[in-house]
Image 1 (cartoon, rainbow, N blue to C red):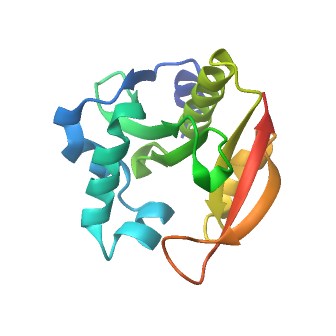
Image 2 (cartoon, rainbow, N blue to C red):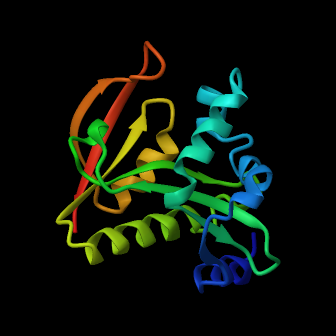
Length: 165
């Protein structure tokens, strides 16, 4: 990717919008070829649709200048999985748009919303099989609070990372 194209993405040629239930099929494609899809949803694509529908009321979409959905972030203001802290329930960037700062943009949006709502901390959960996501969270200042067995798929370890706002 050229420097100018990278700079364009980072200069906010991406808009973050509230999710639209009419675009469910388009949102499912955001998850294609992601570690999250390959580990959770490939064998059970109905679970992805179930979770997208469930999380849609609190989901935000990164949309490029052509109107294409290129990222998804759904937020829970209080999640038992993260000891009641706000959490990103699902985060994905479309495979053709990865490496352009969109995930970081969605995370910054999430942290800003949580701060505006008066939260002092926010959380993310990441698995061992997603080192690229872990690297992003670490770079944004998230710190390990606890590790636990994945409640949805046995044999995996989840890590709850927390950031002070």
